[in-house]
Each structure stands twice: as C-alpha cells, then as structure tokens.
Image (cartoon, rainbow, N blue to C red):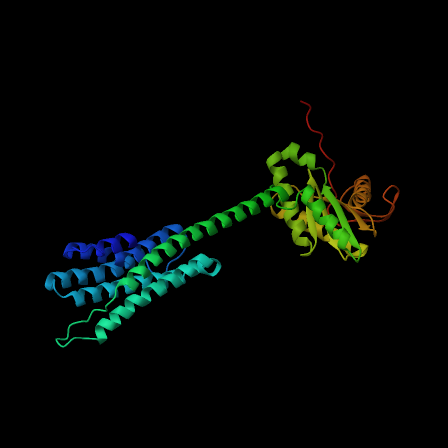
Length: 371
C-alpha cells in the first residue's frame, strides 16, 4: 500500500482523483497494519475497539474530500490535511501497539512501535511548517523538496515488512518452545496422577542423592488391597483412588520433597534433610490425610502401607529402593496400615521400628468371583 501510494503520487500527470487515491493509501496503511496486528494477537485486549480504527481513518479522509471538492486548487490545505491524517493514524496505531501486553516480551513489536513514531515525525513536521509559514493571503505553505519524504515512506515499507517477518519468527519460536514444554510434561509426568513418572522420578532422585549433604529419607507406599477396589467398584474407582492418594500425599509433603509413581498403586517420596523420626511422622501424616479424604469423598476408606528408610552416603537409588521395598513388604506382613522402618544393608535389612497408623481396622478382602 505504501509503495502504491508513492507510485501514484509520483505520476507527472496525476490528477485530483489520483492524488486522492494516493492520499487514501498513505493515510490508511497504519490502520491496515493495526487490523493485521489485531488478527495476529486475537486474544489480546486492545485499549480501543476496531470501530475507533475506522473513525481515525474516516475523519481525515472526510476532511480531505471536503477540502478537495470545496477548492481543488488549495494544494496547501490538501497536503496539510494529508499530513495530519497520516500523522494521526501513525500515532494512534503506535499508541495501541505500545499498550499491548505482548510488547514486553516482543522486541519486534517494540521496534514496530518505534518505526511508527519515527514515521509520524516527518508528517507532523511538514504539517507544522505549513501552519507556521502562511503566505500573504493566509494560505498554508508547502514544504519544498519531497524526495526525503518519499525516501522515508519507502524505507518504512521495507522496515514494516521485515518487522512483520520478525513477529512471525517470534511466534514460531514461542510455539516451538511451548511444544517442547508440552512434550517434556508428557514424557515426565504420569498423566493419571499428575506426579513424576518412574523414569523422571529416578532422574530427580539420583540427582538429589548425588547432591545430598544430609540424610535423605525415602517413603515407599502403596494402597492396601487395591485390587479389591478395582474388582468391587470398577477401574474408574481405582483411578479415582490413585488420583486421591497422589494429590493428598503431595499436599502432606514439603515443597522441596519429591513424590513419584513407580507404577500400579506404588508411590515413592524422597525427603531431603530428614531424619528417620521425621520421616515416620511424615508417613503418619500422609496415611491420615489419604484416609480422611477418601471417607470425605465417598470412597471406600483407603489405607496405606509404608516402608521407610534413610539413604546412606554413597548408596545408589536402586539399593535404597530394595531396602524400602523390604520394609513395605514387612508392613503388609504385619497386617497393613502401618509404617515400618528398615535400617542396615539392603540385602539383610533390620526392621528397627513398626508403627500402626492409628486408622480403623482394615476389613479382610473379599475374594473376587471366579470367571
């Protein structure tokens, strides 16, 4: 539009209609650009509706039409109205783009605002010159030498094109980054329970053990008689129970503790800088929250069995989990709904403590019907 407007205006035999068409294009391109930006950022809240855009474009063009019909020879008035309209549309567009939230994180959008402001300055300067330098009859004077104005228009056209390409590039980069983030979440998070899956938990836990300077407590736990929940109430109830356990176990832990799902109904929590006494208290807290929440949510009361261990210096995650699994098995052997502390070597752990979790007695499982 800019190049076409300059080309029409440069014709030697440009008549009144050609001059008006040129003026229309040179006044309207910032508003057309603004229309494109509105479509490019459809979710942004602009401080002025699109109807104001039409008014900003329509007012100077209406004045230009009236002035041309009133006195076709009044070139000074026509040019001054043209510069006023172009300056108004440029400043208005720059003002709206400046108030977009995307401006804070988009260098291309900030550069576009700067370009619009710089493009408005020659138009406003030419308008001021025409107003200040009136001739003897009080008519608006024309500024000589339009070459610099044509050059600035063509330069604006090139820069606007480059900045629009830059905006598209920024969006492509942002969308690619968002896609990577979504893929990372899909790869690292268990979709049912919204906690780290086995692979991601192992990465986090191994990093925690490698950086630990104080004891790291590990809680391995699962749902007592989880198969009975699935058999009697359906897999949907089982999924609901898993989500409830993950949510309330995470809420019972501290912000820097790490909870993960190893698979099935088995969960594990890493608690850095935690003594075995504090870990046993954490086990009781998790079991009580889960039990209370299951009753409040109308599910069958959910009980947990927990194996508690403290990682030794230089011990690998697999060694820690072997000892925790032995403690969890011992908790089940002792009647479930309890936490058992295992110490010593992973191959021959010693069960140093066993605490019932203060919950209601667990009913015996009902055998599922043969099929």
